[in-house]
Image (cartoon, rainbow, N blue to C red; front, side, top):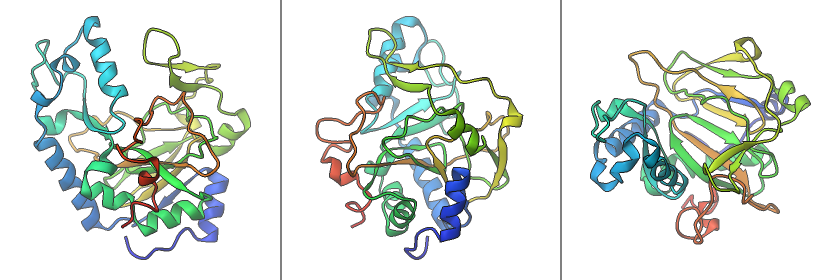
Length: 287
């Protein structure tokens, strides 16, 4: 990352027209490798004894423990595994470097490398040139190298799968922006106000879409991909022998907005990172 300039007028126009923008070579190959090494170290140093064993076992009795582990991960670095990574005794039976589905949701707070990559003048400039006044970062995960620009008043995205891009030659599939705008986003992923599962979808179901509804976008290592929260996007399961590590952080607007209590991710009383809500803003964490 060099310089502190934001999006050019042409890039802003493209983003507003399409609902997404691919910026090539935003991160240098050295920065990509730094993030990759940081994630390798995080996983390598992971001690399963520090996590409730029940979250890694199957059965209905363990569902609540897994749900709580996920729902309280907003201010922590926690590990979420691929299916089949553990046996019925909760013992890891795969290489942990290959068993991870994602790590989240506060890498940007607790890991110095991801914190540095998230909070800097260039990221702030990109966010502000895209229309944000006081951009803040409520969550981050190691799975996608994407920044989702989601204004707080915009309903939650209807995402059918996860866009994953880090390696060269990966296709990110994005639904046409007009489809999302014209039809509106009515299906929402929220905290369940009643007893039962902690999260639910509410609103009318989206019409089924096939692969032809999505435009494939070829991405390269080091790309920064901005995706508006109202744009549908997806990728498919990685069945190759090559990993597709990536990093995502979400940006929302804090100025003159109120964070919805229906969002699945909620801050602690001290804020998302255990301090103040102001301290996870892009501007405040650049020093």
